[in-house]
Image (cartoon, rainbow, N blue to C red; front, side):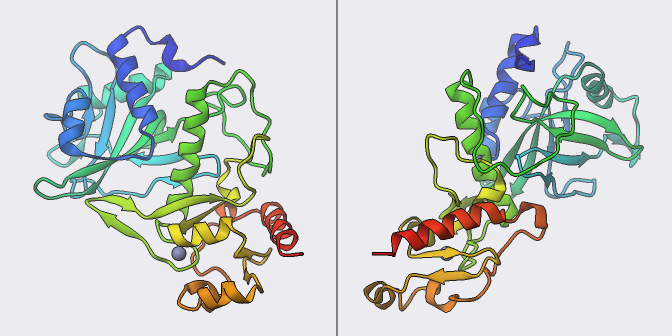
Length: 313
Ligand SMILES: [Zn+2]
């Protein structure tokens, strides 16, 4: 299936949606968004460019008039998000141009960009770009927005995929570099969200001006040319130190997600001040609360085996 953005006649709409697509998961300051995004400076809520039948983007503000809900993520990086329609005097009015423009997007399967405010205040307002979404329905109180899947070939915009864990993915040889980067980017974002932006081992996590810092999404089955899975279940969110130690086989989790630490005496001595030893034999303290986003047994077994092999001699 071809990229649905290629079918859009309005080149400005195509350009703006592409911009939102590649910024999936990025936190961007409002001042910059005002320069990048049509209508951002003047419009809150749903933005419909003049003369277009479609909405271009929707944004949720921190102290908006409508109750906010967290997006729900799936293992492949797709998500669903419930978004309130606009109203007049506190009552939903579906005849408003903006609401109708979103319904038109649903009718013609045209995606919209979705942004969510992460910090407010003078000079420090920022938004996270959730990415592109399709309007999947309206339930009487909210629009149901469904995040764009990355595997167009398999799923298309309307299908709801099942999610068997595949440790190695069969990559489409025609997949462009852009899509490959987008896949890696999604892996990072979904892992970050699933672990609530804190290291799985020491639970450290920082945010400066709404932007998360110091954390990295680690692949449990190491990255290789074979197409290591970009599924969140092949990931752990780690601070930079614990990621470096993980990559060097200083520690590894087992199938119960308990921490194994290398027996190597010089390493253990050097790590005395580090959380690794403190957590030896215990379960990783920070894991996704949804079981279907936690590390897959198959991935963890693979890693533990590599860890054992590494220290064999
Ligand atoms: Zn850590």
